[in-house]
Image (cartoon, rainbow, N blue to C red; front, top):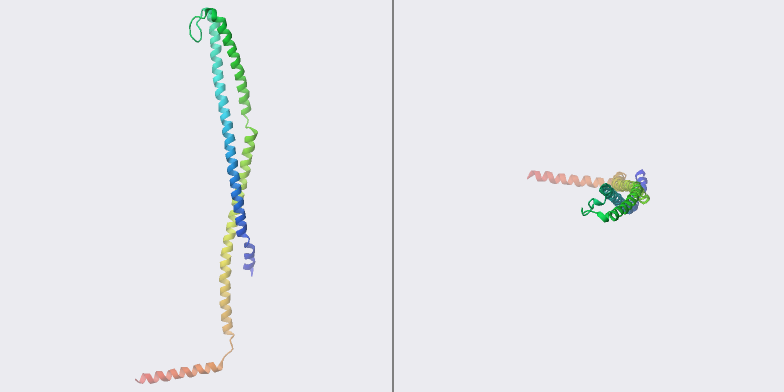
Length: 212
């Protein structure tokens, strides 16, 4: 009786296993999608960070070169060579000097912008942080779903084992009932006497046969 009660409790295991397996598959699909989005956002952020660093490095080098050229012009004056073609500047000195000053100003503005951008990118974007948190949460959900599926699989296994056990015990019980029923069969004196007569006849035949 206790075994039957336990079986009743386990009968829901297959249905629960199917349900939890479907939930696990959905959770894994959601996690895969979230991980792909996280990878995309992370790649974009890292690329932007590297891009800013590269542009800032180039701008700083450009600034250094222009300042060096201006310093050289201030030292040599109009009689000095052109920073680009190396020919004497003479009357073009003012034009070249002004051009370099304007270019230096533009480079300094670019450097300021790149540095601000670098500071902005030093902190992870909100979308990236949210994507990371979502992946962590979904991984926890998937792990719990897997644990529940494992428990349902174990319960389904127990259901099979207990069903086999119940069938075996019921078979044994039927056999015992048959033995008990045979023992309880009333004593048939007439049949017993007939069997004694048949046995005596068989012994007589055996004695006759032994003579020969």
